Image (tube, rainbow, N blue to C red):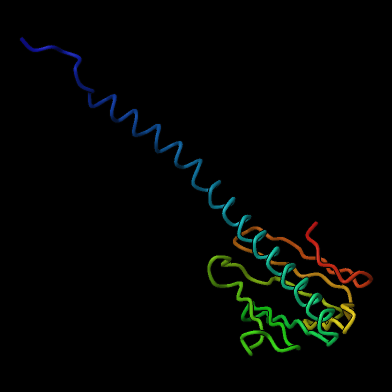
Length: 150
């Protein structure tokens, strides 16, 4: 004796697949936007941390420390006191995990910032970092030398 109703009909399977396709069509773009926002925020936080590092190293060594942004390579290079690796400290934002780019930078009219031996920057400025359609801004206050993300 066979029982009817033990399996799914073709119509039920097609309906389930259609519902999954609609949900996926809604979720995938939102996930991509959230991921781009996350990458932009992480890249901005990294830049702010690197600027704070430059400030701290300048104060600790009482020597100038320079931060140079390269808008074509999307890098930040810290130069000045010798680093433990004997090489300048370089942050590459275009590579994983950030996969971001520097959209704009205005550090007193150029893309170079120098912290003096007291940790004071030569100018205030902003750096805009982007990933996908998302962007995030890093602000540098000339009076305190602190980098922040609003």
